[in-house]
Image (cartoon, rainbow, N blue to C red):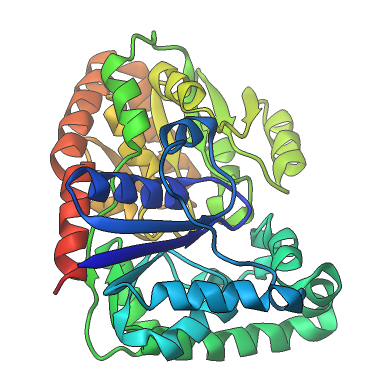
Length: 393
């Protein structure tokens, strides 16, 4: 069976991108005939790893650059040679719609979330333009700056979201098969798209580059709690800061960037919470150092279909305090490998922080069990094998 994987980065290199690349590499390792199509940014570590791999480009900016249409037609002709095409997470919505109509039976969508611009009103109820730091830039790349500016402007945004929803529903219903990355997301997809059946679930796995670094890590534990994620309202770093105001010691280290950065700095200063903002870390070695040195991870998203950061922290033998809104409860065993909390209950979150900060034996025992859980349930071999199983049905 000939396979293709399609993935486009929406302005950043994060868990979805790392997972798509990881699945591709593992499929190649086990001898599958697979081609990877990718557009977007990539970390230096992955660039080096894939230096000799025949990665192919997905044509972009067709809408605002009609001369690129010939590239699109060439791309579509190429896709016809594959038995199955895995849309890994997301590709540009207009392209996804077109593919679902002409090659729908062959397409398997491995979903990491719904198309959030279209569905944000039922996810968080917050305007997606406030949540996504990259939507304007990505829109400009795909549709041209002027068109994107108009579509995302106040007079047109309501219509844009409604049309996006209609297009998204038609796209998804045209796919041959849908696979979710968590049981939470599986049920959510069934409800949102009225699928008539619950999609199968294939859990993600940690980046193998991070896994290698974790197995060799000699980092000494330092006095900080770790947050990894975009600084946007959805990731709810604000709750981390408010909870930390109830903690007797330790600082917060935040890895990520976004439009909430200045607001979060002001809040931390106002509540007298020591916080270090480290910005984006695209080097796996830097990320590994941060995981290896922390006492534990805190992940308090208001909505998270799966959440790879608790898996990554677990590889470094670190427990996690995670949100109960979404997929993270499928990763963390409450009271065993970390704690599951209401992401808005700041006092309760603070009490769990204090429990881990005050008791090094508890912290290290939980971290040890977290690693055991991750290497048992969330390995790349297991994830890829299950994905191939579902794709080849």
